[in-house]
Amino acid sequence: MVSAPADLLLCDMRLPDGDGGALFRRLQQDAPQALPPTLFITAHARVEEAVDLLKCGAADYLVKPVDPQQLISRIFELCRCEACEDWRERTPLGVSPAMRELEQHLHSVIRHPDTPVLLLGETGVGKEVVARRLHELQGGEGRMVALNCAAVPEGLIEAELFGHRRGAFTGADRDRAGVFEQAAGGTLLLDEIGDMPAMMQAKLLRALQDRAVTPVGESEPVAIRARLVFATHRDLREEVTMGRFREDLYYRINVVSLRIPPLRERREDIIWLAERFLAEQERAQPSQPRRLSEEAREALLAHDWPGQVRELRHAIERACVFANGPVIGAEDLLPEQYAQVPEGSEFELQRHLGAAEREHLERALVAHDWHITRTAESLGLSRKGLWQKMRRHALRRPGDGRK
Image 1 (tube, one colour):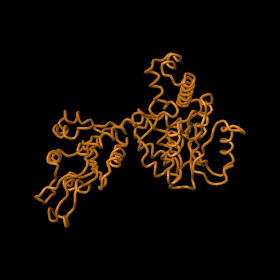
Image 2 (cartoon, one colour):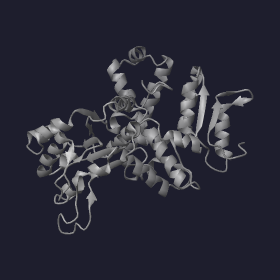
Image 3 (cartoon, helix red, strand yellow):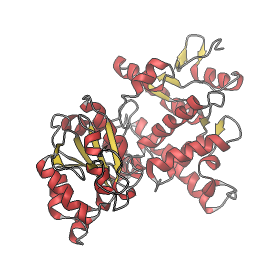
Image 4 (cartoon, helix red, strand yellow):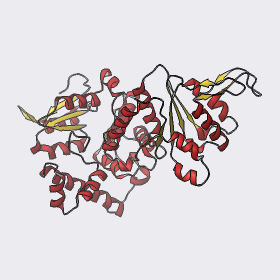
């Protein structure tokens, strides 16, 4: 038994005096509180057993021979100690190939601090998170400032952007720096740029061309010294066509555009994000640790998350509030879908069919050592068809986030 609180359990599937899986299940039954994240080391021949342990609540597994750097990285990602928490602040944006590629693009962008960046993606997909990561990578002495253009009344947006001087208008009883000045030396994110009023689009264009802003009530311009990031959920090309967004401004901000894919296109990130949000909740409420049940994990992967990462975060937070006990079920995460679902209903049948398909695919991939062409042939699928199913079920070669 674990005699003192642990931050991480690292266990081999094959122990000198027993079986790692059996030990894990016994600890789950006997431990007075939820186990810390558990990472298994296994041989190829026992991968299916390790997958079963993931369904029971294990955090992950690595296949022998284990790359030492990969092992160290995974320990840092899972461990609950303060040192690892500091490291996690610098962890990737996600484990899916799409998010790893996006991270690589950010490393390229930081070499060009004067080049504007346009972030595209659905509402709630994490555009501000990506902007903050760019800010962290960029460094500098300034801070990141974010302004939602859609949330500022049209009559106040100029003063919010450019600032104002005392006496510039009724109520301006002191000088106030706009967001361009506030972000000097750092990063300025103008979110929902597609919702900016037409009048301000022209003034913003002039500011970007001159690399300077003029506060309301001031005659002397102030130089722009911030990395400029713009974000929108709208199709700006269509907005230009419809006459709602200036074409010249569009080309001015659309120098480097980065698309953040929705969760339904990167299901590999869903469980990873859910575990991170669970860890946040546990740090806030350490006396109420929670873990995801097998059904909860299947529900997370099956849901399309129209509200994106924001919806997922709220689902985890809500489940931590209402779950009866330490184990979170599917009905805690998505009560409107899973509460009181009649056994044998069509929805229940589809859920079980999806779980069976995932298990069948994973078994075939393991049998063919994750060789895509051979696996596809054995299943009677095309390579593209297999890739699509793997993406839907968040299947990837163990330890390789790039596959």
